Length: 359
Image (cartoon, rainbow, N blue to C red; front, side, top):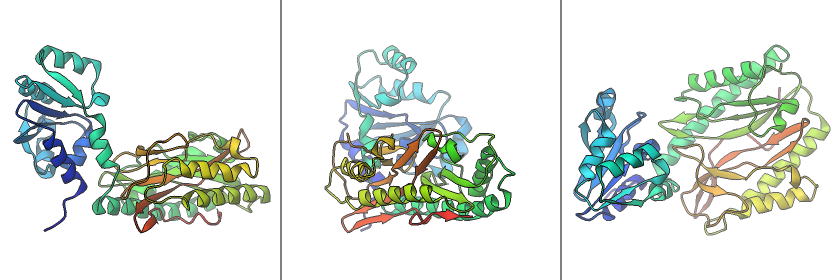
């Protein structure tokens, strides 16, 4: 018998929460995709103990019948109101508070006056935190797209130093990502050169790219699953002081990665990276947390920081991305996506980060 996928186990768990007087409404579009395979931008999942409905309007009717799996499809004018009308005879409504607006809470009170609403915001999110083989394959495919696009992008930059702006370069990289098979850039691509890279989430500007370091943060998407990768491309001869800082950060990243194993604290990698950077009086320039989960969203569970609770579990997929940012002088960040199993870690991203790549 074929082993159930993680999403199948999640749906089974949700149904086990229900009795004859309970129902579930799922509105978060990423959780909807996770459970049903629907790739559109709006729909509702409504579940009772013995019935699972995917409810959407006519804009997505054709897509529903092509994509949705293991749900009965219902096409109506107002999907959310339809789900609430069906819930009105129940005593308990299980819903994701994090995804309900104040207006929607008012509609619930209006239609289902006597129902008790219970929060299940983290039930599906916690299932999504651990990836199965198919999810891991898609993130690896997205990472391969990243690598192919980056290799072409490096050649483009080499030919256009002094001619193009950061904005031009970001647009070109996003074009190449799509050309290589990405559905979309999963987040606005960062291309920051020189001192502009000292802002961790810099926006590409109209500054011309000259010789020197270029920080690039980008993420391709394959069938809804994203990757997230940050590299430094150096235009021209590498400055020795910059190279020293880059190598310290690389070694701090590797020191953090070496601590990762099933059962270890989620807070340990950042603590290790900070301890390593403090040896060179650079810890104060590491201004963000060290990582986050990736998957259907580019930032999802687990959260990796020195304040994180919990431990690493088999199947988690997450980034490790320490950085050094010195105001108006430089910014360096190195980021990989890692999958964890009992046998160890697997780095899913493929661009080499053991040596500075120069053009």
